[in-house]
Every structure is written in structure tokens, then in C-alpha cells.
Length: 69
Image 1: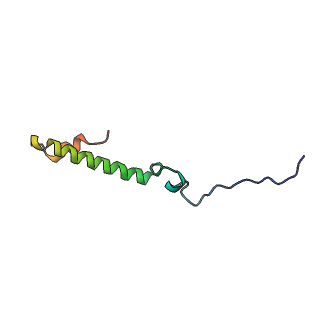
Image 2 (image 1 turned 60 degrees about the horizontal axis):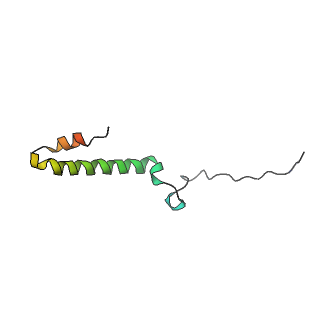
Image 3 (image 1 turned 120 degrees about the vertical axis):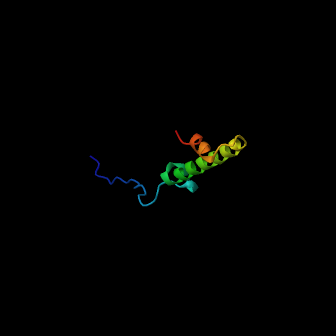
């Protein structure tokens, strides 16, 4: 048998892994994903409200239509 020393690389456990500068995706984490989802919901609600304004619809109608399913 060979009684040599086996060397291996220990992965970094103190950071969040691969960040955007190392080629990672920021949407893999839950907080940035939540931010993107909230921005999209607000944007869709505003666009729907703008489109439904000539029909005299209240904002709550656009909020109901923009709700995530």
C-alpha cells in the first residue's frame, strides 16, 4: 500500500459562494430574487392601472389582475 499524503482543496464556507463577479447568478439567492419579483409586480400593476384608467377602473382592479398566481 501507498502511505502517501492525500491533498484536496477545501471549499470556502465563509462566503456566499460564487458572486456575480465570479460568474455566479445573483438570482440564486432568495433576497435578490424577492426584490426582482416585487419590482415586477409593482411595474405590472402600474402598467395595468395606466391601461385601465380610461375605463374608470380603480387601482385595486389592476392589483388583482397583477397578482402572482
